[in-house]
Length: 302
Image (cartoon, rainbow, N blue to C red; front, side):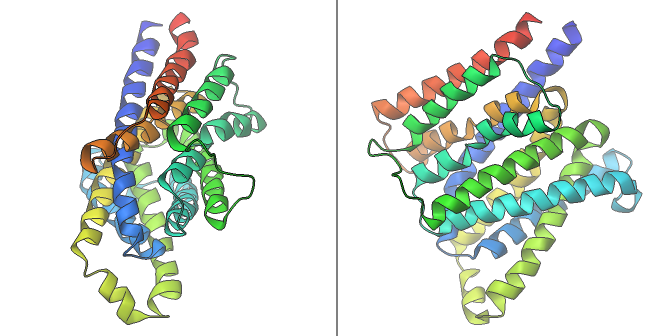
């Protein structure tokens, strides 16, 4: 009992650290969207993330050829879900979504994960549901200005909603395969798969139509700073922390903790870009933290 509780606390801290890394990456993704194409940006950063993890496979006495076929399929499925989710996310930002819309709509996976989990037999504590509602309202206050999103959905809004749905699928896939596969191997395979799929799409949709513009975009120093940060930290470190952290937590609770990336993206925007935080945004942050604590209360009781 004590060991289970200890494992859950460690897993929660790992996912919290992942949300910090992803929160900072949101700034880098916004910068990159104005310079580099969606597929090119994602392809290069995911390949970098996968290459960074290759040396760690030796520590697990593995090489890419030694990963069992059944487990390799798990990495391919997770990688495909990651490719689709990250494509819609970066495309939504590139289509002109504001930071508030992007943060709010992407984080809607905290609602979708427990709902989708019911269809595959994943039950969660009753307290998770009010926690999800509180967190969703907190995200609304944090990310959306007083005027709200509006009744009509733009192309960017639709792309980000699809991103949230696909990240929900990716979280459930990680939940299924992380307990039976080395987290490092799982993260490495999913990055390589996502990177290869992105680069294939980049050649078809971005390089062939305009090779000169494609090369010129990659000559920007700011683009490479964004690519290297998201490749090394957001991918290699962040998603590996996710794969390790989800091994001992219910996916609904894990998604709540990872939704804190919206809070940290706001904080990093304040620290790095000198953006101010309104009272509305501060209240949203407090509600999200309260929701995470509420969701963990039944686990402490057990």
